[in-house]
Image (cartoon, rainbow, N blue to C red; front, side, top):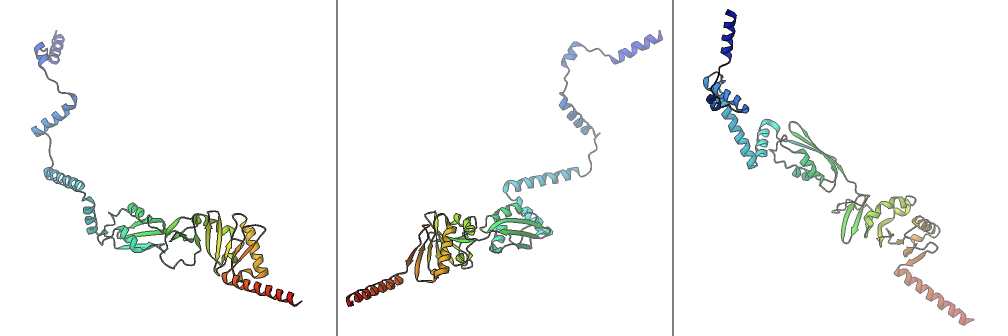
Length: 310
């Protein structure tokens, strides 16, 4: 009897019947909002302890975020960063440039944009490298930051192989024919001169074609490209050698033999035409032609007189 009574009392404590109207009027918050409501209730009731100075710190964070946002929108972030890091001891004081024989250090400093207060931290090394790489003589470049106050610039420069004359312009070229820069002074006057259309791209073949004939090449003042197919050689004594389109090696062999046997290139001649394999044509200078004609006339006169005497 006692056990039954207790059981009935427990059951009545856990199950409280609700009227149908009360169930219909009950309001249940969506699950995502329940935690937020509980937090606000706990905060209002004082059950959550807020640390001291939280308001001050939050205000400072808000002001800093507002300032950063304003600098970003106004485009002043870089300026502020430079001023701050420069004042902290990172202002660039030394620039070390190596590998530059033809590239001016002044040009490099200008492209780095240094003004005495430029910060090493704020310097964009990749952007500086791209700018320096566009200089005419630069083949490759490396830009390194050396903390706290130095920048290293290492260059690899292009090599001038010859001078190319196109029209009235003179340019320095690499062996593959790539133009480096306009010729500005006499520093490269000893380089071979290539003249004419496509002469700059055909220049690379000269080394192989004249490998067996260094003596002749040493006297060549200019290689003139004719019709984009063959070369005329302008020697330092004024003689012009007209080479064929093919079999250049055979033509140079003939020229060398004639010069050895008859001292041809030291004579008063204007040109040697080697374009035909089985024939060599010699063109005299105007003075030599006049002298030769005078000699022929004198001989003919002498022969005529001798014939009359007999």
